[in-house]
Image 1: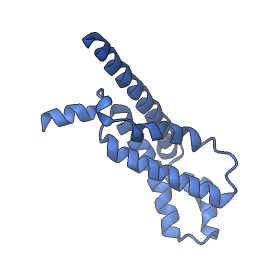
Image 2: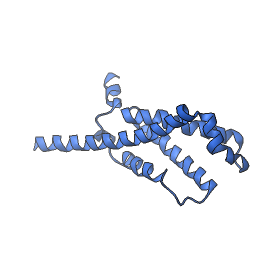
Image 3: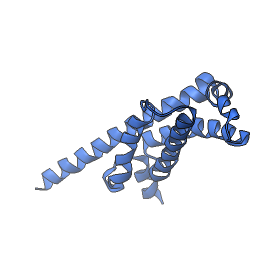
Length: 145
């Protein structure tokens, strides 16, 4: 019986590690491209400048370009290693809401290829018990304190 509990615990932990790492890689690579490949000012010109003709104030549009770029980069990395897991999940979910709003403001959201897979991966990380996610840097941080 004890051996079965270990297998189940390890299987759950492996599943959560995979889910968290996959989502983290997706966000990290998106942010990496925005911050280092294109740079945020160029991303702003390419994707955010068109929102200047909407009801949104300029400071909010610029702030959103920086927020989405850096929260995806840093949040993705932190998610991969499992550090500040709960806080990062909230920041990344806000990122997805902002991105969804922006896409919807531009045109009706018929194509969900950018948002839906990330939302599907993020939701179980909120719903499954954090104690099951044992292979994370937060575990080391909590042992030290």
